[in-house]
Image 1 (tube, rainbow, N blue to C red):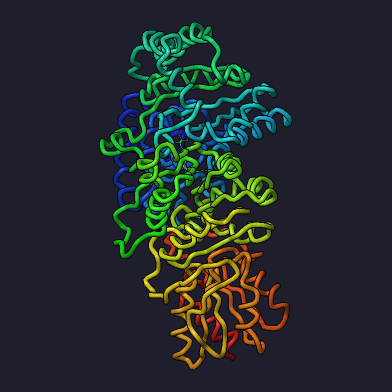
Image 2: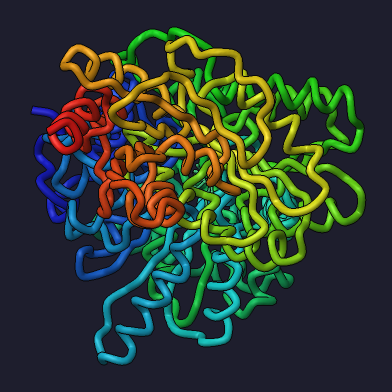
Length: 614
Ligand SMILES: Cc1ncc(C[n+]2csc(CCOP(=O)(O)OP(=O)(O)O)c2C)c(N)n1
């Protein structure tokens, strides 16, 4: 029986010797590598925090104590040690474990996440609730160096330093976001890591602590030794965190289990707000991931099917380079996602016109507005789900002032295995309600390229383009022609019903129309291309005579394009809205999820047949 198999929950850890814990660390790493290479998932981040997780669970007592993992993508070891090892092979599959922290999954997951930089605020909330209710549990937030640069983390820090309640921030510094971390905070952390004055703590603690072969008496001695080291270490020059009113301690070698456990034990007893700076190696224990942590941040897994066509991200990537070649006003902005959004090639070719702002979507959009008013043509490339962070920036900074920026929203629609935190299903509903916004949904790669070029020429107002994860549909479409706002494209003639397919759903509508034809229903298929301004005149003409209209969108049915069409047709035709139900969708394969909610061609045809054909 492996050591991991003997761990039903954190209490079982207490019985283990340090040697056994070290073996446990190896077992956890092996299991994560073996499993994630099959299922896909966030590999490198989780591998980096195995010792840190064991140390936390040796010192804190959850679920009474609250430990909050920022983003949660690095919490696979946490899942393994908090009673979920037997289900670990189900991770990110439909009905299986989530790839993030999730309150409904386990009482040990104190706060769910998937978007970054929320942990300090959530932890402070717990700490204040504890204080007000007279309780005395411990609270810790574990946050990465990338997430630390996010606006919310700094807002939380600002309040914590003012409030001064007891809470620990464990800053897990691996010098990486998904790509190498950027920004002044990152530079500050590097200085703390290399400055001999701070480094002294490492030396002192190391010397005092030595190697601890087992727990018990020797651990207590070690804790005392650490305390001596810490006392000296506390007399350190000011750090950014001290300036915020949060006591800085570090840096600590986070992949050394004995040191990490000893330091954590001591630090967890210090009253007031404390930040422990922990250095870890992203991808630790798996050489390819250690060498290329960006590539192994998230992996697809061998279970994934083979590729067919070009992805929307690739098309965007190519188009950005060719547009920047033609126009030196074109600049690209990413919020810590150059790889995922397809901007790596742009950043190589035009480094002076490329801006990675860190995990700061709000700043990215508002900065783009300033750039646009300054005469540049900014393109913010961002995932739809993370664009939720910057809604007010689109409304207040871009739309109200008619700033000519372009926002390229990748991963619009269901993303699959990352689940509800990452599905990009709210963008249509959110942004269609904002005046002055242009909103386009290309159905394939060639239209994306044309729309992007067109978007850069608009002189006023923000243009948002939204496209899905993965490859373009295999359906062959007629030449798109011009893609002017207010004009769509009739893709197929038909007498009985008008199917309006938003973005890639145009291809599902084409397939559904084929199926309907077999049952004697003649369906026209129309792609609006631009959802805002909506092609109102064309829609009215195509639906004239009271022809029933079915709007199909991979976005929330509540307030989506279907509602817009209903509003435009104003009761002259029956409008059936097929979209993502007004509920959070689970994780699983995108294709399976689409079938579950009735957005595959067969389900669309069946529903149209049932409701319109009869
Ligand atoms: C608001 C938001 N934007 C972007 C992301 C995508 N994302 C997931 S993890 C990550 C990097 C986080 O870096 P860090 O906090 O240092 O953690 P590490 O993975 O290095 O452990 C990013 C950018 C996100 N989760 N949330």
